[in-house]
Each structure stands twice: as structure tokens, then as C-alpha cells.
Image 1 (tube, rainbow, N blue to C red):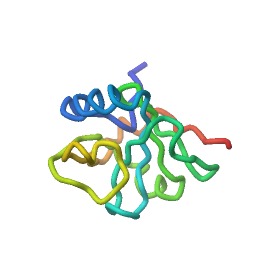
Image 2: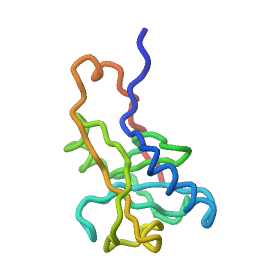
Image 3: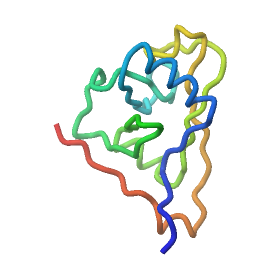
Image 4: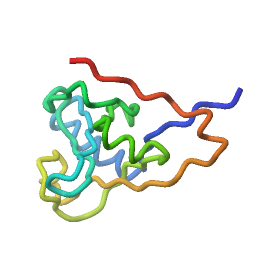
Length: 127
């Protein structure tokens, strides 16, 4: 049997920023915003600081950080693998990397047909 295919991955550059933010704030979590503030941007919070609801799903874990998205938005993204990356520039959000002059971004690609059968399942959030 082939290995599972993650729904969310992370670049080395994003790992470095996560390390910097984690050193200052402790355990982190991500939530893919659905259009507020920076449009559709990954938001980084101290773990537990963002209130999740029954309408959220957990896509997976990136670099020891759980990654969530609203169920409605997931319906649009379910055929895409998301890659958490970082770039210079200040976003207009409350994400923890913003004071560093950086912001997390999502790069995406369509899953190949052979990957669709091996996707890591999403988990429902229960509050």
C-alpha cells in the first residue's frame, strides 16, 4: 500500500519562521481564513487562541502545528494540496508572524488522480 498523501505541507522557509514564532509564543496552530483581512490567508495563532467551531475541520498537522479550515471553504479546496510558505511583507491580519515583516501564504496544486485515493482524511472539530 502506498503512503498517505498529506493535505497540507510546509516549506523550509516557513519552518524557520514557525521556529521563530514558536520560540516567542509557544505551541502554535494555523487556520486558513475564509476571506477576511488578507483575503484567504493562513493565520498563525498561539494554540487555543483561535476559537474553533463545529463548522471547522482539521486538515492535518504541519511542523507540529494543527492546521484548520472552515468546512465550507474546504469544499472549494478539497481537491488541492496546500503548501504553507512565507514571504516578505506585512499582511493586514492578526497572524503572529506579521511583526517580523513576514507573512504566511498558501501555495496550492491539484491532487493527481492517484493521490486522491490516498489522502489523509480531514477531522471534524467538535466544540
